[in-house]
Amino acid sequence: MIRINENYLKLQSSYLFVEIANRVSVYQQENPEADIIRLGIGDVTRALPPACTQAFSQGVKEMAVDATFRGYGPEQGYDFLRDKIAANDYQARGADISSDEIFVSDGSKCDSANIQELFAGDIRLAIPDPVYPVYLDTNVMAGRTGEFADGRYDKILYMDSLPENGFVPNLPAQPVDLIYLCFPNNPTGASISGDTLKLWVDYARENKALILYDAAYEAFIRDRSLPRSIFEIKGAREVAIEFRSFSKTAGFTGTRCAFTVVPKTCMAYDGNGRKHSLHALWNRRHSTKFNGVSYPVQRAAEAVYSQEGKVQVQELVDYYLNNAALIRKEMATLGFEFAGGENSPYIWVNCMRDAWEFFDLLLKKAGVVTTPGPGFGKCGEGFIRISAFNSYTNVEKAMTRIREALGAELS
Image 1 (cartoon, helix red, strand yellow):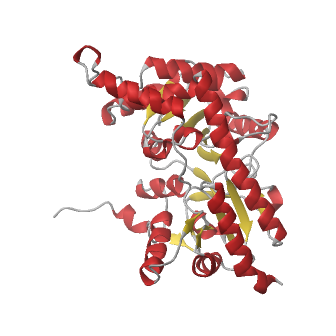
Image 2: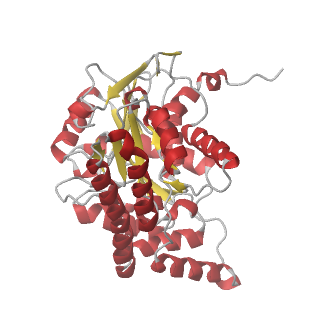
Image 3: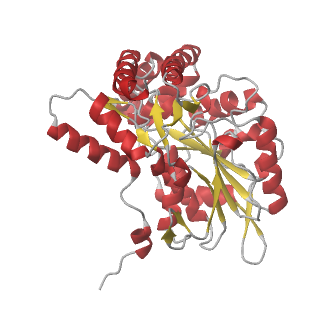
């Protein structure tokens, strides 16, 4: 008799975005003529930058000729891409990261899900609430949580992110081993200052903890006083791993390329208190379970760092931030309180009622898809996330529809 991993039975409902897709599908089947505008899932809608598509095309052409054909590449990524990442994303900002501390992958979602395999089953976790579901669910699958009750799992330290703390959680009141942080934050859109991030680094150093830092949305930071990497903070090399993605930076959601930074000085401990290199452990795991990102895709990612690529990526990100500014303006006009949308593509709106009820209202009355906050955790009750990833025309249309749907109710 084959037995299942019963930790999967602890997972609550379906994955958030699957539930949203199911509700939208049912509505569309019942209303086939409906014009749906999707401001829910954080999927980009604009084409890849021309510099990337040109490099992508050239890479494919090389694969069509015996003399330039590439078979298996290095699991960690080609040097031409890792060198560019290290120089542009880290060294140019004063962060001491070398190219051989960078692991290229097919997505930061995968990396942030898989990294937990390196750690013992009984470590103490601190996870923000609300939170990107992958952080929590993968630890549920791994058996690090107890049972689910009253909206939360036991054995998890939930770090509340609320309006009163600016959606930046407070330091844990008790020692923990592994801390998940995401800034600019998904889902709240909140950002973190360098001084506040230093408090977290200092806490991790003092408590021999590790920070898993998701910086997938760093390209949206326009406030130059804000850190774009945790490695801009002194001491972070010893206590942090960072995840980055080309998905939102350059529209690679369907192309799949990301990277994880694991400094060689970042250590964890065995049961006897002996130090072990997380870089070495992740390299072993990465090499065993991953065969690398395709050569043409890595050439396309490299083009992000070309002179033309930098300009085009900036224009792409600015386009989505312009959408976010419109959403902020319209929601403010309607009298809603919200966070995000300035250094982030997400606007976290206090909808002043049950979030799934508000989701259904916007879907059925305005034909607009958003993301209900409870899917991100207990502290998401009463909030929805609106994504700026769509065309400006569609965002304008969506805001008009929302204004018309809510106007009579709010007047």
